[in-house]
Image 1: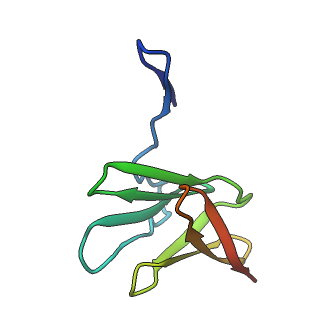
Image 2 (image 1 turned 60 degrees about the vertical axis):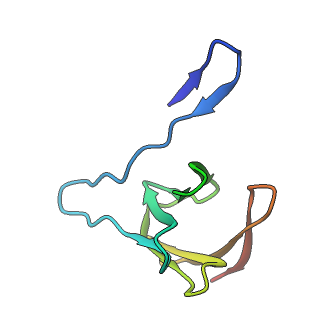
Length: 102
């Protein structure tokens, strides 16, 4: 959902983790609990609880079925219905970069 403020800035409201009957929702967080990653359909969402920023990776075509966080919190992974596994890094500009894809 897209939202516009009085100042003319546009923001995107990202859905919370939801489920379809009979389908599990996958989510993960770092050891400190400062951020959460989860999937909504084919979108991978990174939500930083400390800065209240949310980053969304929208380039995947299939429904994401599993997500994970590297123990040091620097890389994130997801797998989708087709069996593809993707490893991502969140760059300093807030964009995701694909590190590896199988």
